[in-house]
Structures are given as C-alpha cells and as structure tokens.
Image 1 (cartoon, rainbow, N blue to C red):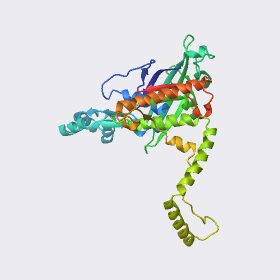
Image 2 (image 1 turned 180 degrees about the horizontal axis):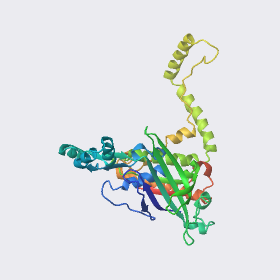
Image 3 (image 1 turned 30 degrees about the vertical axis):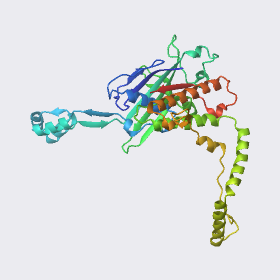
Length: 363
C-alpha cells in the first residue's frame, strides 16, 4: 500500500481550485515560506495523525481569500444614476465597491477584501499493487480495505480514496466527515461514499514531527504514549501478581515509620470526633496501589553512559537527539506491528496493540 497523491481544496493556503500533490516512497516538499509545504503535512495529520489532538479540522484551516476590490468609475455610476437611483445603487454594488475619490481608492488598495471559504476538502489516494498477490507477506492492507478498493482502469492497480470534507457555518462551527470514495463522475466528484469508521482510520497512521525549535512536547508523546500503548498489549499476568505482592510489602514497611503512626493516630482521633455514622469510621494513611497500568504511565527512556558516567533521562538530549529518539520509537513500533501482523509476536494482543497496515512518516 502506498500513498499516491493528496488533493487539497480550500485548505489553508490552497485555494478552492483543487491542487494535487503526488508522492513516492520518499518525497521532498521544496518551496519558499508560505508556499504550502507545512499545509500538505497538516492536511495528512488532520486525517490520520496518531496524535489525536492533531486530527480534525480547525476554523483556521479554511482558506482565506484576499483580493483587491473591483473599482467602479464614478462617472459611469453617475451616468447610470440619471435614469434610476435604485438601479444605479444595485448596479454599482453588484460589481464591486464604488469609489468616489482618490483618497477612498487609496484606502481600498491598502485594505483588500478578505473572504473565508466555508468549505474545504482533502482527498488521499492510495494504490495497492500488492492486491494482485493477496496471500503475500506484505499485503495486510488488502483484507482491511477489500470492500473499499476500486479498479479504476484495466491495467492499473487497485486504488483506495479517502476524503475529509468540512464546512464552516456563520457561527464558526465546523462540521466534518471522513469517507471512502467508492465511485466518481467524469469530473472526479464523488457519487457514492461510505463513512470511514474509527477502527479503519486507526489502521492508517501518520507520525508527524513538525519543524519546531523546541520539540520536547512532541517527543514526550512518543515514549509515553507509543511505547506505553504497545506494552499494554503484552501479557503481564504473572508480573502483575508479583507487583500486587510487592505493593503489600511496601505499604507495610512505610506504615511502620513512627511519623506515619503518629499522624495516623491523630487523624483517626480527630475524625472520630467530627464524623458520626456507621460507615467510613476508620481512616488509614496508605500509599495507593501501583498496578501495572500506573507503572506503564510513568514509563520513560534513559540513556547511558552520560558524560558523568551515569544514566540520564531523555530530557538531557539535544533537540536533534530528541528528534532522533522520536523517529527511532516510531520505527520500533512499526517493526513490532509488522511482526504482529505476520503472526511472529504471539506475546502481544493484536486487539490491544492495533497495528497499522500503513505507516507514514512526515518531517
């Protein structure tokens, strides 16, 4: 499965006239600032980003058209007004803005008309050449999208089209829909669609590393979320029983501290004086139950040796090194997912791991 193209209409700097970007195995987007390089990657992120906070259309994603007002000759307006004043007003305003003086014309030149488009759409086109050999080891996408793929020409590969459409109403409310395109007319407009489920959406994953001066927010998401989710798919039954036993021993040891005993005794005494009832009569200071899920939430990546000879957390890495950590984490999860799809990782639950059948890296 490969991403063949992305077509954008009314998204950020892309005008309503559709623009198509073609992709290869590795694609470089080159251009000056403001040409739309980031917009292309963000459009993909709105559809398939692993980070759910990047999904979905924002108000600022709608294209803003800026144009000079059309100038109307005051002499022509005056001439039209000699017949019918009402008609003159209609004729003048329908063509643009009436200019009555040089100063007004200069003001309009400095203040162009701004119009926010009320609709946008982004369409991703995938090709699946492996569909000709569905039993091969590298064809996990074929069964996933079997009923959405289409053969658009006799000699071409199977294609999968997914479109994200959004509209903006007068109160800045965004409505959007993500759909498979099942058929199109001669102009490329969809004639038959099917909603894309959340499950199907998760099977295509985009990992986006934006060009930031400080990537720590993005980097922290990778180890704690990607690695944490992957490890939750493992079978931890035996280890979980050990953790529960260790929790009991830790709590007993800490509770024996004289400070805990003294504070606990005073708390119980004051509580019994203030609270009356048959329930919740005996407060006890405890240290919580650190089950496996809580431990996985505290997961981090350390590196060694540091310049001091000991291990250091990823916070000590440079911006470039943290970016490399993010990429390494994504590639590691991708390889584990491939092994799971090939039935080579029996210690993981496919239902919990939810491996992607297509992974896209965007930098």
